[in-house]
Length: 286
Image (cartoon, rainbow, N blue to C red; front, top):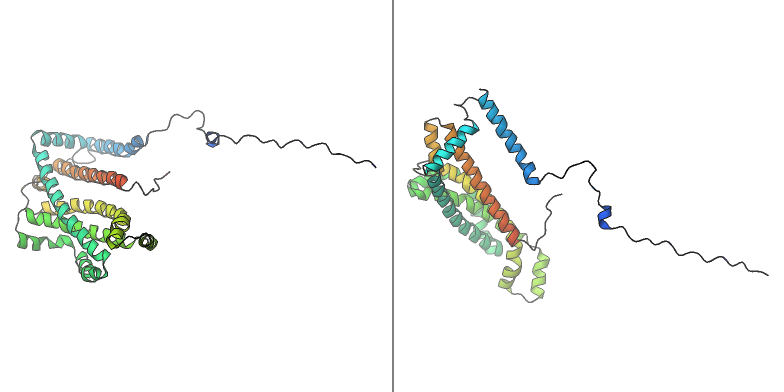
C-alpha cells in the first residue's frame, strides 16, 4: 500500500502593506499647485469692488446715490490725515469697551446665580427672560430721561444688549454640563465648589465663548443706535454729519470701519477660543 505524499505547500505570499502615502490620491498630472485659501477668499470681494467701480465709471451707479470705491478711498485718506477718523474710532471703542465690561459682569453674574442654584434660577431667570423680550432699542427714550444725553445712555444701551447674550449662553452652558461628569467628580471627592471650579465652569466655557461672540456683534449694533442719537463724537456722529451733507463716501467709510472693528473683535474671540478650548477638539471642515 502506497501513500501519496502531497508536496509541501509553499508559504503564502505576504507582501508588505502599502505605504499610507501611496493610498492618497495624487494630484492629476498637468494640474498646477493648489490655490491658497486666503487667496480664494479674496476673489469675491475683489470682483465686487471691480464691478462697483466699473458701474460708477459707466454712470450706471450715480455718485449721489453711492460713491465709487476710488472716491471712498480718497475720503478715508482725508479723514485719517486730519485725525478725524482715528479720534472717532477711539471714542467708539471706548464706549464699546465700557459697555462690554459692564454688561459682561452683570450677565455672567446673573448666569452663575441662576445656573448654579435652583433658588437663584427661580428668582433670576423669569425676570431676565421677561426683560429679554423687550426691544432694547426702544429703551433709548427712557435711558435719555433717566441718564441724560451724555455717555451714560450709550454705554447702558451697549451693556444691556451684551448682558442678555452672555446670560443666555453661560446659563445654557452651565445647565448643559454632562451629569455623569458631575457624578465622576463627586466620586473623586470633590466638594460643591470643587465641582464648580473643575467641572461646571470648564464645561460651560464653550457656551461663554459663543455668548461673547454674540455680545460683541450686539455691542456694535447698539453702538450704531446709541451714536445716532444726541452724539457729539464717534463714528455714528460722523455718519450723521455726512447724512446732512449727502456725503455717501463718508457714510460708507464709517460703515467699513464698523465692519472692520467687528471683524477684528470676532478674530480676537476666535483666538481666545483656540487658547482656552484646546482640550476640546472640534471639526474644522474638509
